[in-house]
Length: 252
Image (cartoon, one colour):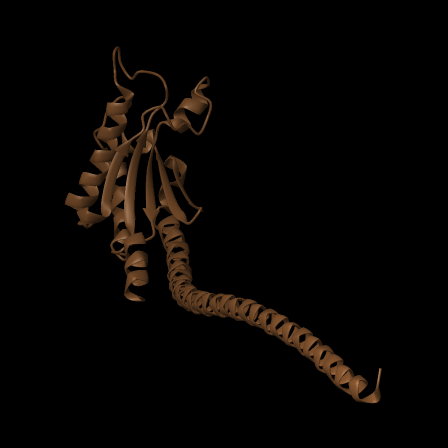
C-alpha cells in the first residue's frame, strides 16, 4: 500500500477510535449524573426527614417545657399551702396544749370522782365516769355533773373556734330488761350538750353529740371494774379544721 493510501486509513481509524472513546465517556458521565441525581434525591429525602424530626423534637420540647413550668408552679403553690397548714397546725397544737392544761386545772377537784383529762393525737379528751354524771341507767345529770361541766364550759368559752364532740359510752350489760344501751349513750351525750348550750352558753354550732353504746370499750367488760370504766362520757376538743382549710384556700 502506498503512503498516500495509508494516511487516510489511519485518519479514519483515529476518528473512529476517538468517537468510541467519546461515547464511552459520555455514557459514563450520564451514568454518574444519574447516580448523583439519585444520591441528591436520597439526601434531600433524608434532610426532609431530619427536619421533620427536628420540628417534632422542638414542638415536644416546647410542650415539655410548658408542662414543667406548670408543674413547678403547682409545686410552688403546694409548698406555700403546706407552709400555711404547718403554721396553722403548730398554732392549733399550741392552743390545744394550753386548753389541756386549763381544763385539767379547772376539773382538778373532780379527779377523784372519775374525771380524766389528757392530750392524744392532736385532740384533748375529757373522760367523765358514769358515777359523776348520772345514776345507773339514767340520762339525767346530777349536781356534781353540772358543776364539773360548768368548769369545763368556762374554758371552752375562752376558745370559741374549737369544736367539741360529746360521745356517750356504756358497758355491754343492758341497763334494764330489754334496755337499749345505744339509746342510753346517745341520750347521755345529748344531755351534756344541752347543759353546755343552755346553762353555760357554749355556742351550739361548735357542739356535736353521739352515742356509741358498748362498741368502744376501754376495759374488759367481763369484770366489774372494767364495766365501770367503760360507762363513761367523753368530751373531745378538736382543732378548728374548717379554719385551717379556709386559710389554705385564702393562700391561693
